[in-house]
Length: 500
Ligand SMILES: Cc1cc2nc3c(=O)[nH]c(=O)nc-3n(C[C@H](O)[C@H](O)[C@H](O)COP(=O)(O)OP(=O)(O)OC[C@H]3O[C@@H](n4cnc5c(N)ncnc54)[C@H](O)[C@@H]3O)c2cc1C
Image (cartoon, rainbow, N blue to C red; front, side):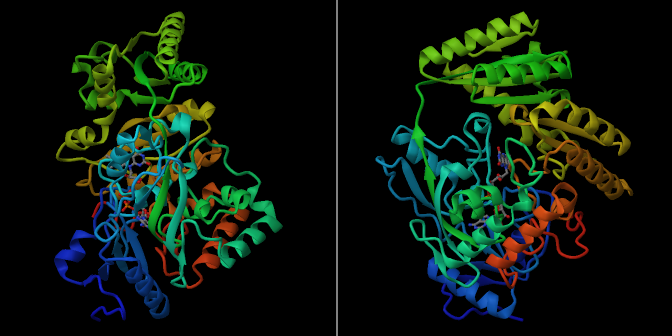
């Protein structure tokens, strides 16, 4: 059936090349859509949503497609926000905010902020490619989220087209539907019992934040395109800090990681990252001129960053040096901005290096790449993970945000082996059981997407899942937006479209 939407003046396409292009993303899930819609402005999105709701179409909003768990692909109409929503307003110096179209690449907004001596602290490592809409929709986070939190508190407001085609404005009043949702959530708060006590969370819907604040943006941030289409967002900024410096600590054992994260808390570090042994080997970090000698025999490296005034940063690095020495840990700190960048480079080259070095027979596949556990349970998570991977005969590259208990795990999957899907399934189920037993969730920043949606009920309490369903039914009653993302469809296979 050819696609036609009354009142839509943007681009609609069903050509094989367009559909192929948006059937893939950076993540491992592929799905061929029925059509592509490229709205040119807000009116187009309103017309599309109204028509889709009437006709029973499904819409998958899409930004830069750098998301991992398959929320950016779907069988219905993919809605590409990157062309028509590139407006970047002037930075509001008084309020320290900037309003940007959902399709604006985050780095562009950050550069504008930087020219005004302002900064967006939760920026993810993918800032050079991801869109402001995608960052908001995933409640993304970055290395400095250790100190500054994920995107949600840094989103001042959102403009979004809701299921009935109405527009929620950035400065607008909460609509009646959001008020109904909030009242229902507040009337019986059984969903809040046993809420995972993690430092970051991009799984499920942020019901606690929304019920507390009543701000529609709080539940739309992190909703992964399942509750509406974001068209504009307001990012909160803070003054650029005078100085920052990085220290790299060699970790001889897993226990040393616990010491390093304690240390990061004590010096109020902005970031506390770690690179596991597999990462060091695969990334060739042993040959790195700055940290090669620390990496060669280590179990892992911790990367800690101090920020603030020059005096505060110096005091932080001095304390790190003293305490690391006291613990018998080798440490190297950056002497200047260039070395700081160099040390961060070791961390930022992670994903591309791993993908390039996985070898022809193996694919670096992100399907358990974002679990988060209470930080004190990190050693249990890492040892349980090693057992599960060994059972599945999979190697994996492990790194991530140690201070937040959020670990990125990229298994190297031999997709030529006849049983690779069984091994992936075993790993996904094993990790889900492990994370549930440790009181964590399957996503600290990338979202549930399609891969993790079928696991939702094993992580969250029945009451929380019921409240998630009620939230979806209230805000998207006919199920227009991204079905099968966050909440699973009946019989949904987590491996659908994986590695295709
Ligand atoms: C090398 C690399 C490094 C990364 N590092 C990080 C990191 O440090 N931290 C982190 O959090 N993530 C990271 N990611 C994952 C990803 O880049 C981020 O989650 C990013 O925020 C996704 O933005 P996007 O524009 O690519 O969104 P997409 O991938 O296009 O979409 C992601 C989700 O958001 C929804 N969505 C997108 N735009 C809209 C919109 N306008 N309205 C409603 N819903 C929308 C989609 O439906 C989908 O569910 C990394 C990815 C890569 C490839």
